[in-house]
Image 1 (tube, rainbow, N blue to C red):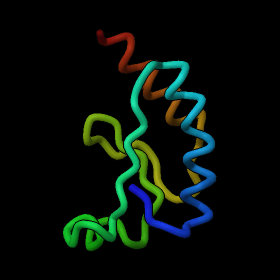
Image 2 (image 1 turned 120 degrees about the vertical axis):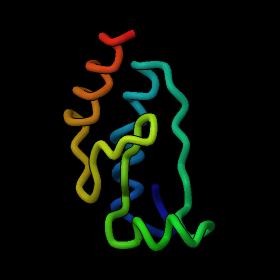
Image 3 (image 1 turned 135 degrees about the horizontal axis):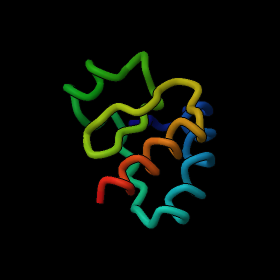
Length: 77
């Protein structure tokens, strides 16, 4: 979850892009201002990283936290 002109969101995207390449997934950036429900839910939390609708991290995104969850999910496959 993101919004336009959000420096914290831009940093999060830069951190997640290498993980998308490593783990072979599409990075889907959703602008919370395009959906009233998302805006209400995430407005003070963005950026928010979701994997399969599970909130993994928000705010100051930890690349290692996201990477750890991706590794856990890969083991389940």
